[in-house]
Structures are given as structure tokens and as C-alpha cells.
Length: 426
View (tube, rainbow, N blue to C red):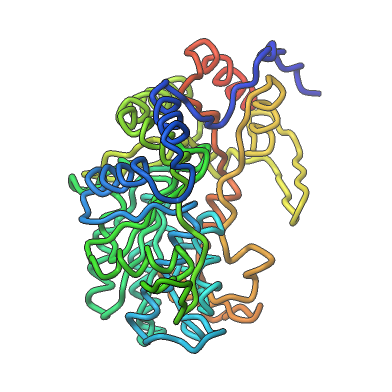
């Protein structure tokens, strides 16, 4: 029998994974929209957000949209039209074309490829950064040299080698879409995430480093692209006295009220990053000596530390079985697993969650192709058994979880969470 684990008193007020932090000016700009009657998808707040977002990301233009998913969708549309020309009505700009995509990410990175008729090919993850593996991408281009578009996502605000990814794309004549939804304010070699791609996207979702409750921006250095995105996002209306339409459009523009929240948040971006960094470093110090690894930080990067996460070392994993909807584990002295850690965190009224489940493991994409650095390909559910491969994304998902990373969490609260995690290894 195992010794009874120490009971830790639950928090009276829930400690969240990452909740919005308001400062006051947000309400001022929202009120300004109300008082001036600019409650629609035009107004001074939107203009300011676009100007600030472009300057912050180090690009020439930002287009404010209703969310990051719409930004990614229009990235895919404009990339497809640049590569393959305008499609017929009813067809996507990437119709029938393979697109290389990050595998370990939220499905909002990938779904826009499918909206435009593209066929995702998932590229495995790199242990060194938890992002797309450049070596695996090179292998994918060897297998599919005709591919001309790559969609790369930065995970949890910790940059990967997007510089190498961009170089590989250029060598193969491919365009790069950079999903920087989780990485606003993070840098690689002093350059901001979101500015490496031919097109980029950032998010102001309710749990992001700064928020508008929703909203996103498409980032570009091309004025023609920015103008096309603005047109498409307002139902592709032509410049005529009446409602005239020659191409398919969308209702994707940002509200001037939401833009007021975002406008009020931007001055606090660096403060939020500093707070998130302190949380990461307290976890790293408090969990020292345990057989775990925190989010990796590669050379010449400054993360925004949006979510702190850990993986349990393989030899210290107890048995854990995950199905599509349910999970179970067998407790074992001196060992643990993400499920037990998340249960322990939940038991004291705090919120964690599993690492992103890789796209090639998702039921919706289970028949998609998947490429690792050894050249392994999974297609239509059939595994090429002649090529042995370590499925890195699946391994990180199996052994990893995200920890409460709310920037309003107190040191005392975090200490109790750390105590709960340490207890899982007893």
C-alpha cells in the first residue's frame, strides 16, 4: 500500500490557466466608441490597433479582424491566390494542394487550410523547441517537392527555429504563414514572432498574453495584400454607390468596441510578459530535482512565457492510457503522469490542461500524411513500417501538461500548486 499523500487545502477562488487582466484604459476606449457612436467595424480604436500591432510586430501593415482564425483563413486565401491564381466561385484557393503544417498545435492553425480546399501534411515536432522540426520539413520537401506553402505555429509563446523554417521555404520557392497566436511579443534573434512569415497572424483571444475578449490581426509587409484582406473581410464590396460584389467575401472585421479593449491592453504587453516569465522561473526553481523538463528555451530567443508547461521523464512515467475522450492511469510510487498531475492541480481548485494533442492523432485528421525527420509517412491510416520513427509530438503529448500560468496568481498560490505537483512523485 502507498502512504497517504498530504492533503493540500483547495483555493477558495479558482486559479485559472490564463485569464484576462484588465487595467482601466480598456474601458476608457470602449466608452469612447460608445460616446462617439462608432460601435461598428470602423473607428479610431481599430485604426490605432492596426498601427500599434504593426509597429509592435515589426511589420508594415496589420489588418484588424474578428479573431486569429479569420486572420489565418485569409492568410491561406491570399497565399493560395498568389501561388495558384484566383479560384472559381465555390472552390478554395488551395483546392487539392498539399500544405505542410505544424503538427503539435491547436486545430485553428490547420482548419483554415481545409477551408481553402488544401490538404494538410503534418510535420513532426522538435524536442529542442517543441515546434516544427526543420529537419522533418526538409524531409517533407524531398518527399513532396511540389508543395509551395508552409503553416508554422509557435507553441505556448516559446519560439522555435522559424528562421530556419523560412530559409527552407525560400530554398524551395514556398510561402510561409506564421501563426503567432500564442507568441505575441516573443523574439528570435531580436526579431518579433509574427514577422518572419510572408504572412502572419496574432490573437487577442480571452486567454492570450493581451486580450480584447476576441480579435486578431493579419500581419504583412505588402500593401496590396493588406488592401485585399480589408476588402475580403468586409464581404468583398466593390467601390460603387450600391453593394457590388465580384468575388467571395467574409464578415471578418474587428469591432471598434473590442478594438478599444485591445488598444487599452497594448501598453501592458511587456508587463504581462515579465509576470509570465516570473511564473515560469518560479516553477523551474520550485520543481528543481524532479524528473521533469519545462518548456525548452532555444538560444537567441526571448519567449513571452504565455503558458508554463512540463513533461515527465520517460522512466518516471506511471502507466497512462488515453482514448479519444477518456483517460486512466495506474498510480505508482515515485512515478506519475500528466493525468495525475492535472488531477492534483484540479483537486486544489486550479486549472491546468494537457499539451496540445498533435493533429495527426486527431480523429478529423487521422488519415492525413505525417512526416518526421526520418521520412516516415502515414497515409490513409497505413503506416510505412519500413521506416522506423520516433513520433516526437505524440511523445510530448503523452508526457506533458500545461500548468496554471495566470499572471494574477500569487506566489503563495503558486507554491501550493508546486507542492501538489511534487506530491505526485511521492
